[in-house]
Length: 148
Image (cartoon, rainbow, N blue to C red; front, side):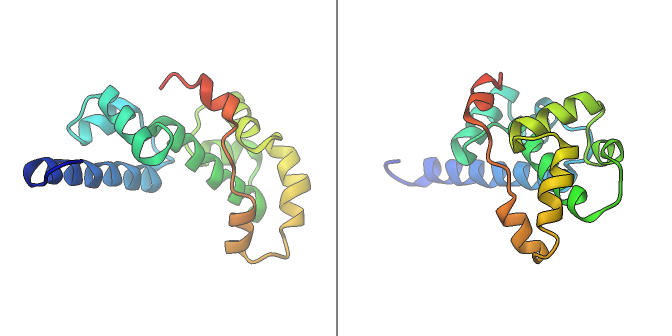
């Protein structure tokens, strides 16, 4: 960026706005959210929000939302006795099939297998360490198919 003044302030304002969108996703991940609603709240078009969010955070807002939901599901699978179906709905999915597909894409195994294999192996780890070592890494092939 060259110069300063209004151009610099505009960019800083936009980054602050993107951070508010990200924070909203982090807070309200279990609620019905879509890119259009997030964009309206940020006074942007959905396309502009998606492009700017991807530039700032490396993935579009919809993918970021799905990743947050799966991360929360991973925690619930490790620490709760809720069924996979209950967890699916608790983290904001309306369909068990969609939840299982997204979970498998991000984590590399279905939720029930994750609970039986990985979660039990993390039982002795402090929660903050377990969260870090089990954090999903978006599959690059799956990310390339995202329409957003």
